[in-house]
Amino acid sequence: MVILLKILNLAVTLTAAPLLLGIIIRVKAWFAGRTGQPLLQPYYDIWKLLRKGTVYSVSTSWVFRAGPLVSLAVTLTAALLLPMGGLPAVFAFDGDFLVFVYLLGLLRFFMIVSALDTGSSFEGMGSSREAAFSALCEPALLIGLAAVAKITGHASLTPMAASLQPALWTAAGPAFVLVGFALVIVFLSENCRIPVDDPTTHLELTMIHEAMVLDHGGLDLGMLQYAAALKMWLLGLVLVGVVVPIHSGFLCLDTAAALLCMGLLAVVTGIVESSMARIRLLRIPPLLIGAAALSVLALVLVYR
Image (cartoon, rainbow, N blue to C red):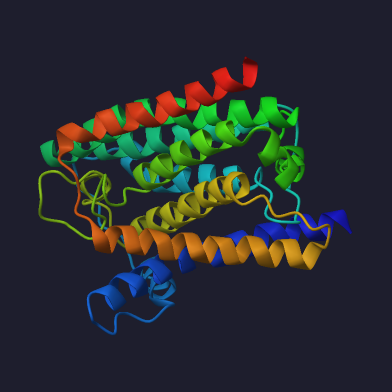
């Protein structure tokens, strides 16, 4: 029975991840007074790209070709470590939250080196910004999860999520609030959403993620887009698990509540992107440093 629940968790993650992008697109279209794309448009786009061929520049090496495949494989591995609602993770062990953070770092590393392998100065700029911003995001995520691990008394994500009860929020409310705000900033930054980056632009010199994938096409671009959707889903699960600790003891109810919260997170993300503009590039580091400071303060409150 437990094995079936783990398989169900992985199946829901793999199938529902692109739906978050579809919800965000529809919310932004509604705010703009447009009908917008179909809710399942991200699925159609990824499937279309996966059926296309790829073209490689003669100046690229095996690093460029391996980047999308390794990025997708690393993201799928990270998906094995996260529980969802009442569904346990496929793998759970002490310290797996550290492995989760480092897997996201490995994903970023291969995306950066595959972009640098093209020799394009434009992709080099995007890679440089991605590396700089990730160096500020990773401490916020890692220290925030460490604070939650200290509060719950568990060093594994599955028992950590199961221990997050409303009563625990009452006992350590300020620390959870600080970690929650830090994870919101990390979620927007790591997924290259406004106010950090605009995922819909391909023309401005300030873009980050889209600058790194300009030379990818066809199957490779489809794998990168699917990996990005999975990454958004995984970070969303972390945020929802901390901010909305719903554990009624009923498997179906807890899983449905988690999925509903993920949909609400996508709606809120669309509202944020529709109500504000991207901030100046030089103001992003202070924002990310602030997120890391919130996580550090939460850890200090836990250990006081």
